[in-house]
Length: 318
Image 1 (cartoon, rainbow, N blue to C red):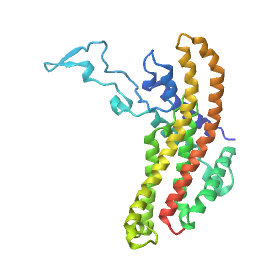
Image 2 (cartoon, one colour):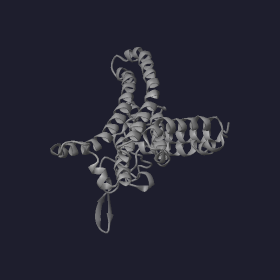
Image 3 (spheres, one colour):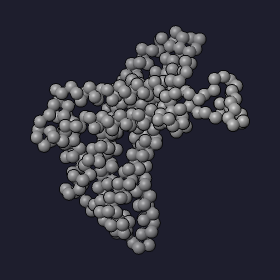
Image 4 (cartoon, rainbow, N blue to C red):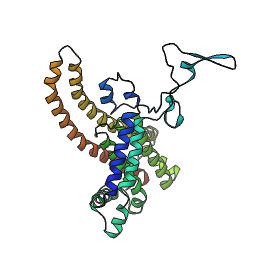
């Protein structure tokens, strides 16, 4: 088996964890709360590579520029990534989104050739099996023959992008991008754009909107039209909430069990912290195993429903 791709995959994951662990505001300062590090899995944290520009004391020092006094504490701001001010700095969740894209590019480098020639290492054959399953069992039953090849790359990207983000959130030190409502909202927005855009291109704008309503009495048509238009937006909204809630809820359960240890350890009865540690860790590990299954399941559900929604918009009679 070619070891280059597994090494690159490992390097991407470790690199993302390193950046998230060492350059986020969760870990700034020597008095950081341990619970901040735990909840970094689900809470966006800005990346800050330098504290340059902060005041060096409780009272701001004044400089004189062109005869005017300038307060250092208010004039400067912490420098973030690429020299951006801290208020505009990217977050650790964006790091793991970029890592997911890199993992797709690296992992699937030889899959296309394998599907054409049948040659490839074990990792390539495994990923090719996933690609074949998505094509044959998810896309083809919901798309007409001519459309499946056009839409298949997008659906493959969507599935594995979500899978890699979900799974990296289970790695110690990782962060779950799909536990952010903004990330799932962006994914749902792409589904909405695909539904509307591809539907209007395929059917024509007028036929797309008038075809939303089935055969109903004329007096009922306006009401049904409003209902169907609302339905177009409710579908991706449901995708957004489902993915966000499932990924956030699972992590919060795990972190709640682990948080019991820190909570009791910080009280006058620290011995209770030692007592609850074994069952808390055992329950957390059990939930983490379930989370691994949920990570794949939620990617499947999001992609499958997106395929159905887009397929219905493109060919409502199919």
